Image (cartoon, rainbow, N blue to C red; front, top):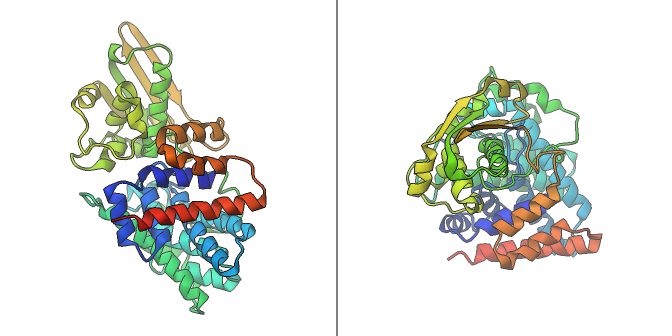
Length: 411
């Protein structure tokens, strides 16, 4: 399911000019190129509690390392591939939680970009079969380059995605160095290191020592393209519309979100910045009302259409203190609408694709149908079907060859 979701994101967005620019910028590091191309789509998986999107880093890195080994050894080790994916998720989630998750994001640090070098290093080191000391050195060498502060680069191609690709490439290079005997200092990763990067008031060093092994199952899937902070409210609004409420009959929409997310989702889209339209709750709600297909469009217009902007004037967004009680594990959304003399309210604390909620496979199939070009759907859909080891190996190799071919096609 993780591979299917990341493959969908890659093929949905790889044709864009910005994606092609990333392919060229990272022509010598295919894992980094694919990771950046996936992450820019904003439809990859996410762990809400840690505020991190691990699949965009881990799956391309695991594919690259495992298939490279297979080319040398004439065999793709599924056991190594599976352990590499699990290791990458575990390292990423623990580091992001240790830095403070949502609190780190509010303080200007992008948790996924911060953890990307260590996620990539752990994933590649396990996939390549490094021993315990080699894996530790790869992660430690990557940690020496970690930061996560990228600001808000404007324009397209955006420096945001270049910085993300560089973080992944840094982790892959750290693994290469460890494979050649270079040693890092695992003792670097601790309270002082976290405090030097993030806000000492928000760091949680004990998260580094977590013993749980459920990082994969605790990471949810996005049902459509959006900043995750907006999704619960959009789904709540969709549920109201599903009750037979006509969008044009609605005169007012009040949206409550957790306090930590309120400022971000209320920020109006900036003309010319595609990502800002994906994070703007006004645009997302207006799209759900008037143009539902836009929720599955990777390449949004730089400036929302006039009808969406007009509809957005009906929307008011505020911090809802009651939703803070479920933070950071749940980014809830409460929507109240006025339709004529009817007032309706919907509270959404979970969506299909969240851990343990709904039929994730069915949701991914629907997402596939809306998101991915027809020619690429069979390749992605195959990963949602049962398979023996031989079929799994073949599917992974076929997928990586197809992704590499798209990279090579970038003019």
